[in-house]
Image (cartoon, rainbow, N blue to C red; front, top):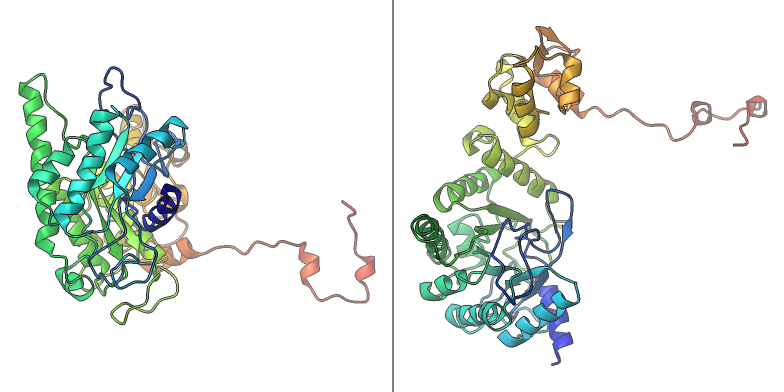
Length: 425
């Protein structure tokens, strides 16, 4: 099989892995090398300033010994199979980079033969790129659960980001759909990567020359909708991963029904709204001071598909509102719908000079169509309705009907239609 055919198969096989983000890495440039991660990152993602950044995103192989029910690459699925050699992946990366097609590499793999054999091949790819080709660009590598820790540690010296996919939110889900994968084998390399990152940071404080280890941090991915796990369980797992392993990101991938299996749920379309709500809740965990228990409970284990998690939290806690915008502390400002981190900071700074008015909130960047129901400005409430959960919910969901034709055309025609004014423009 020629390299073009391999590329076609293995690029297509990699499309279901969503663990991509801009790197945040600043790997130092080595004299005589090529590539840079200082201002660039991962393929098909967006930087804070709006730039789209590119990546060669492929699998090392899709020839898998596992039989995970949800995976298109499982051993019992009849699909074209292909495998690269480490040199082929390195050559492809360099050639694509020199043609200005990419800014880095996102490399994952199915499990061929066994975890150690697969991880050896992935590690050799990144070694060739860094040592033989002196490539300074961004590399995101997938760590293989169950692989020897020495291989994980060696690969971490060459890459910018590493991720170990959890795949499913519970041990029960793994037993049902991926019985060859064990929770312990997934969490063990995540713990190793975290310890090595912390160790490297501490060593850099004491010594001048210390080799970087996964400088852009680690991430993971969860499949949403392939099992019966509620959003509450997924969010609790997410919170635990952030606290225990200091992950940069947890990615959520709505289950795509690309394969049929009696253990999989029957659905036509992936649960993308659910995925979106989990990303919104994830943001609240990381930047807004919320906990999983505040956003969901055993009694309400799933997110509202009509309203975002921050609004639903506010409606469940309507007794806390309205809040006077000129007296609320920073932590409480972050919990008001329509107010983000930057606008909360601007409110704190602005009210040191003078009380903030309702019109002033708009200039600050507050989304008034949501915020107006939950705040007062200088003692005055601008919501226009009583501060009650049902009324506010109804107002937030109300969408006025837009007429695409003049109002007179929506009525039944009559014999007098020809007397109505006609606009030739």
